[in-house]
Length: 252
Image (cartoon, rainbow, N blue to C red):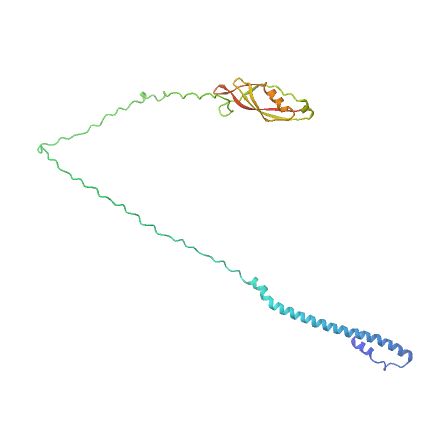
């Protein structure tokens, strides 16, 4: 319903017929239309207030945008300052002129003429004969009769197997015995020993480098002491050497 229709409906009921029941109905209708008219007027006032507030907000935002816009784009548009470049020129000094060596004049020797006792006779011409040099013949030189170098001294103690030393060869090997406690615990592995093999191929000075528990290391030492080797040699002669031995313990 438009505003004009509401105003026409809210006008006095003089134009309507003056009957009793019809007048009551018109009065009730007029009260409802007056309430609707009041609501429409309040809505108009609210719309005016909203429009004034919206316009004021737009103006304030426009002023704020005009004030802050140069500051926002000033940092982006402005180019970064160029770094200062300092050019250092190297100062070159002229080298000093070379010193002139002072030449010391040599004293001049004066030649004193010796008078010739026989000016009328011609002087003899002397020719110096070359001296004879005795050069020995090649056959006389004993170039191939050089003495032989003395043989290297034999080592007094055990040595390591390196260079011209040949390593010993195993002749007889005794298997180690498993201890009962190690068998029940199912211990397996390798025992590494360092021993000295003398000139006769016997095992001496045994040291345990890597043991196994439960008596297996002692069993390995006991078995290795019964091994026999062909001794190591140096220049064809037997020598005592240090040698590492491994004893393997494996359960069947």
